[in-house]
Length: 240
Image 1 (tube, rainbow, N blue to C red):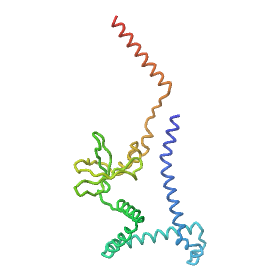
Image 2 (image 1 turned 90 degrees about the vertical axis):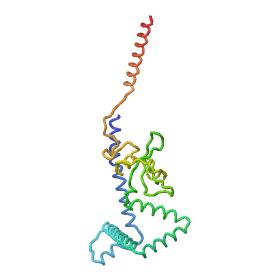
Image 3 (image 1 turned 180 degrees about the horizontal axis):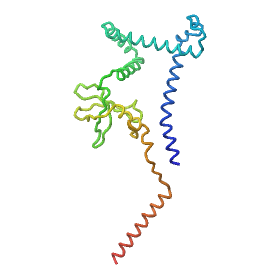
Image 4 (image 1 turned 135 degrees about the vertical axis):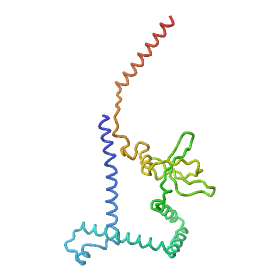
């Protein structure tokens, strides 16, 4: 019974991430291929451009390819603009305009902060540390590279296994324990709720199984009872 459960769990650990990744890629492909403006690229247009005998599935691939090329070109163009004084002025104006809108500013600022955190590339944003929240109890947190006005470090302490939620805490620098650990190791431990590590993504599912049956439990209990009775008789004999 325990063997097939372990095999089934090991299979899920391998297949579920692959299936989810493929599903996201397929959904993204269909989403881009079905976008309103991209729909203007059809089979007739490609034939007029000289692509004879192109299939319907190839049209979808061309739509996605064109969208990605345009998006990457736009990203590089905006990035180059941000290096200039005009780009900084435009960014400030856009931020000021969005922050005047009550509902939209929350989404805008949250997505901008997430993009800056993911793509900033600063080491401080990707440094795992340990914080002793209670006596003898340590928790994993990550530096944000920010400080409060009184000099405390701002840390993000994610929850497990859902690391998208957590707590932003203010800690004195001397209370932070630096650790020699990669970000991947810390995230793996959090995502697996403490059961996994970077070298064993299955979270220990391939360990040596220990099967405990009711009959074994009964025999152990009986052995304990026999030892207790023997000890009792020995004590009684000593008293006599």
